[in-house]
Image (tube, rainbow, N blue to C red; front, side, top):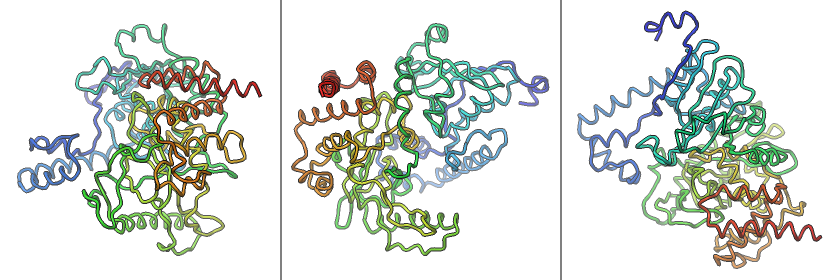
Length: 539
């Protein structure tokens, strides 16, 4: 670049840059590689075991093996250079004392390089995935854009009209414009647009002005941008911000900590394709739904002893890190550890989208079920340091509070917030940045929500212990009838909307943002909300 445009760079950089960079991750893709050498390999339709079996066959061929090794060798060096190069220092950031980890994506490199190559006052227009304004891994780039540049427009398309052929119709991408220098106070934005012609009317005739100050209050850790589409969206967000974010640790009440278990690829050697003595099922996201722990049959099982050994090894490593980072001198004893899978725990799907019927899909899992990394889990038992001692098997959220939390997260109100942030993954940091009332049994609104949610969750014998702990006799007090379940869910959503202090117009607006949900469900939910308000006003 310096040799081709030395005169331009000598005077400070480019006046303008327009680019549509590659959107590819700098990371080996085994299925993509072996597709070129086999008619059997497919990206989406093969199980892990089927692919590994075919890969082993292909690698017997020396020529294929050499090509595979050459392919692999290119990525480590590229990735290491990009992570170390001073010109790409905004590819990562520090959040809560930890460096954000993310695969190197070419579009992210282009964003930073464009900022590097512009002169002060120079302007850039770039077409990139929507992750630039939502993903934790792009937090450093958002700080670069907000703090050292002036964002002049963020126009987001959903590819429903196939603006880009060969790209999934639900994929979202943005036309981002910014000028180098200064800082951003507010910027115009429009989301979920479908026609390129609409760009001609932006920002004069469409879109909203988004204040950076509001973005930072809504997402203090990641500075993610919510997909506000109207002034009422901003009004609702301001109202919900009176409650603490779920990731805040608050003394004197319950808190949540999240974790993952087994990796679908890295731990696939543990997966068995048949049930058997001593084996426990692996529950993927597709095997549960909102308030329902059994939504499908597992296809993998793990030997409990093998899996437990792996989990204990990870726990010991975690505890030793705590000891190393402190003055504590303590022995880490595996026999003292109780593991998460042995208890009831909150779980939700990682893979999702704002264009699905519902975005947040969560429930409470019964004990003795393992999960892959595509399921995010409550870390029920974790190691911590207290009074200069390692504390094992520590948790401060009880069964009622756990059920209350999953009821709120599954509600239309919270799902509405998720849909304004999520692209394709409901990651930890999205959940931690949700404003959640930390109610307990002493709050009048708490038990009515817990009781209804427990009736939806506790419907099989595996939940008898949980049912008893929250005031039901057993799973027989749970509700299986579809119409009764629908009514319970409508009542829950009405109660939670009221809990957040939403007006009739605000809640109706939220429900209108779920176009794939049956109209009868929307009507019943709004009726339940209005009935609750009516009864309360009579009192």
